[in-house]
Each structure stands twice: as C-alpha cells, then as structure tokens.
Length: 346
Length: 46
Image (cartoon, rainbow over all chains, first blue to last red; front, side, top):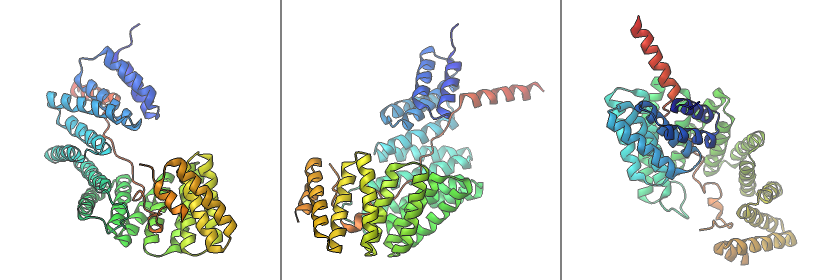
C-alpha cells in the first residue's frame, strides 16, 4: 500500500515535535518526493523542513526550504504564510551573519502582521528584529573593548536592538504572553549589559529569572543567574556575582550540562580572584580544569592552567605556579595560540 | 582563529556578551491545518 504525502508529513511533524529532527527530515523529504496538490500542505512541509534543518544547525538547507516556502506563499497569495516564511528566513539569515537581508525579512514580517492586525505576529517580528540588531552589533570586531565602550556602529546597533525589544515588550505585556516576556527580558538584559547599562541589565535579568521560575524553566533560570553574575561583576559587586554564579553551577549540575558547569567554575574562579580569595579561586579553577580535561577542551584547559598559575603566584606557591605556567605554555604551542604563548613566556 | 587562553582579566566574563534566549521559529502545522479544515466544514454544514 502506498503511503500518502500527508501521512509522511504527519509522521515528520510528530517526530519533530519529539525533538527527533533527523528522522523528521527523512519523512518530510519523502513526503515531498510523493508530492501533493494541496499547496498549503506543501508550504507547511517546506516550513517544517526549514525549521528542522535550523535546529540541526544546517543553515544552508534551512535557508533553501524557507526560501521555497516564501516563494510558494507569495505565489498563492497567502499573506499569513508569507509573514511566517519571512520570519523564519530572517532568523536563518541572521544566524548566517547576513544581517541586511535578515532585516528585509523582519520588515516584511512586521508589515504583513500590521496590515492584517496580527498583534502576536507583530510582537514576534519585533523580537526577531531586536535579535538581528543585537547579533549585528556583536558581529562587529570589538576585541579588547569593555561593555559600554564599543565603537559607535556597535553601540548604534545595540541601541536599535533595545528599541525593538522595548516595543516588543509593550505588545507581549498587552497580550499577557509571559513566556515571550521572559525571552525578551533575557535578550534586553544582554543588550543593556553590552551597552554598559549594568543596573538596567540587572533589572531585566531579574524579570527574566522571575518568569523562568514561574514556568519551572531551569535552563532559562540558569541563563539568568549567569547573566546576572556577569552584570554584578561590572557593578563591582563581586560577592553578589559569586552567589549568582553558584546558583548557575548548581543548575548546570542538575541539568547535567558539563560545558556550562565548567564555565560556571571558571567564572567563580575569576570572581574569587577579584575578591583576592586565592584558595577558593584555585578550588574552582581546578574544578574547571578537570571538566575541561574530561571534555577534551584544550583551550579551556589552557585557560584553567593560566588562571591557576596566576593564583599560585599570588599565594607565593612558586613551584605550583611554574608547573601550571609550563602546562599553559605546552597547550598554547599545541593549539597555536601565539598571544597565550607570549604571555606564558613572561 | 584560535581563542587565546591568556585573556585579559576584564574580558574573562563577557567573551560572548551574555547567554541569549532561543530564536522563535514560526510553525506551520499540517495537523492543525487539517483540524481547521475539518472544523470549518462542520461549521459550514450547520
């Protein structure tokens, strides 16, 4: 018995909902092979294929299918479908660093949503717009600069991002969409942080944390604690930062996310260094080192060794300091890290 | 280009500018489309 396009698409949809995007892609591609006369079904297949490839980080394929969807929806005059295709295409172009094209898509998404008085769509387009400006700002080279002290083009992009997030917040608050508010507060907090508005960053991340707790969303809670820790560092409130990083570490362990656990240990090590509590700094840097070794993360291992060398120097443990400095030098040579190598030789 | 292990102390906390929230992708569901068609046909039948 032949399987219909619709049956294959429904199975692809079921698998993607379960998070099995690889298997979902196979069913959607089989559905396309079988073909359908129903162009709404074809649009949904293209769109879901694009999203599945997006989640699989295959952005070239995601771009291809979201483009197909956009062409199709324009051809059949499906405005709502075109708005959604534009939104997805914009997100994909943003990830690919093609910000100007992404903005054109966001603008089209926003225009259609306004034309058809779709407030949910407008809010989503504004959020995407904010994300494009935020990513554009971050993509511009800023090595060595501090938050709030970036070149003017970076700051201008970040200010635009914050305007779009604020406009989104007005709408999602009106709609009572707490989940959307949570996401926007998180990204707005990061934007304020990069703009050097650390008090505003804290206020936004506190809101994000509150909403994450309402939903029992521990990943979002962990992100909020980490981002709060970063903001408190720049406010010079190192003890408060350490408390937030400790919550990040607890949640990373609960979520069994080793890479994030390593990052939290590294942040705690650095925070205790700022507090001149070198014993605790060493304790956390050693924890970071062990995880980096487990994960075969040579750059992380090098950072841990460099930090351990500095902390032991501060304590006057010269043999230990020399041991870690040598390890750091060895890793820098292996990874081709010239600046690290020069620092290690000093 | 490989990242340097020897990072300036002020850059230790913001190398990635904070952890971002996930993108929101628009969903077009085949099952919802057919549910809608079914409901519409039921409503128009009455």
